[in-house]
Image (cartoon, rainbow, N blue to C red; front, side, top):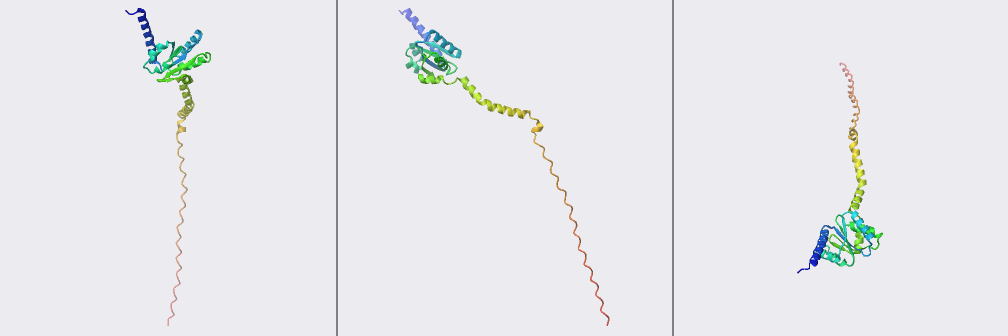
Length: 210
């Protein structure tokens, strides 16, 4: 006969494992942190900041449950980091959201430690995860990109607007200047005067008669 309590425990474990798998299936990144030493107040503050970030779930699971859930998945590389108290943050919209928010809380909760993370199927250790937390969010990157285009686009818009509002008569090419009047025709050259006919030679005097 199966122990009812054991069966109940098994079902409860499967519920937790299925919950983790469902979150892993939607997550763009997963971050593990060492939650040892966090007070209830600190844990509440961390949860609140992650919730406000949007698209992030934060929860503490038993390492054994995590190991079963990540088996044969892209997150299996986290297994070696599942030692001691572990809290898990799932990012569903922005790969850097959870790590970035946790890094902000480190300023007032230095007890928090990054353990590892998985992004795009790649597993990263604590140092690499901290570096991940320093990458700006997608919204910030897009804002910077648009800002870099703003000035040239504004200048281009001004030029287009100026052309559109310009008086058509001004925009038309200037009419061709009237052709310079041709210089007055030169006076016809005076006709060449005919050379005066040579004077007739006086007739030869008749020879005296004999």
